[in-house]
Amino acid sequence: MNRFLDIYQFTHFRKFLEEYQAARAQAEPGFTRTEICNLLGMEKSRSYFADVLRGKKVSPRMVAKFIEVLELDKKEAKYFETLVQLDQAKSDAVRNATMQELLKLHPNPQHILNEDAYEYYSRWYHSALFAILDAMDVGDDLTPVQKRIFPKVPLGKLKDSLTLLERLGLARKDEQGFWKPTKESISSGPYNNAELIKQYQLQCFELSKQALITPPKKPTVMSTLTFSISSEAYKKLEAELQEFKAKARRIIGEDKEKADGVYQMNIHLFSLLDERRETKDER
Image (cartoon, rainbow, N blue to C red; front, side):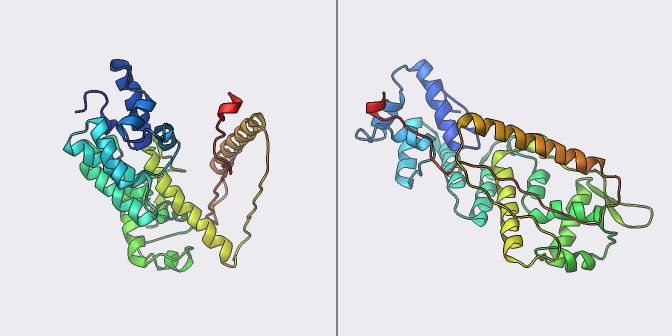
């Protein structure tokens, strides 16, 4: 194990870099961010390390240099490389394959996530089927679900999904022989791994795209708003969104009528500007 920080406690390489520098600086005060740039051979770019922490892409050549500076052993080096690949994955397929590799490399995969939880969040239609079981009377024949679910999912995958829900204790047959959810809702809870949930959210965002370009068969609410506000106003807006999410959960939980529809709601709020940096003249 690295003498300064256990890399296996992290699933974000940028967070690991930030905390590693702080931990090592306590033992070696000269190990500053500027010194890291020097050790990386970036003497003319003293902001490189800070830029990486802010999201700058790291090339394979620089990954190798980081491994040397961080004094990682062979296994830790491979784990670090995989963390970088996960962060910089350009597609869901690559992200999924990289996450699987990360699980294999971790000495205790349960620290990252529960295997069943990973499987549940790895495909959007698992949560969709969970909700559909409440809105439809579904027996062992999932053909009626396959005909109605949007976007379309192969029948075999829906059967695998139902098997997963049963294994997780999220669905069981009622007295009439229909599969029904055992809970009103599901939270990521203790398995709220950032990379895992990010992968799931990316799939949900793709659902929004499909809903936007496909003629709706039911009422669909789609709206966008681009605006400029102060940081204080942003905080108020963020708080209002959190309150709305809580209210939405209450409405869903208190709904005593039989469900007759399944809906997807995604809320996006993000900055269109990078973090402002002070120039020398402004200091």
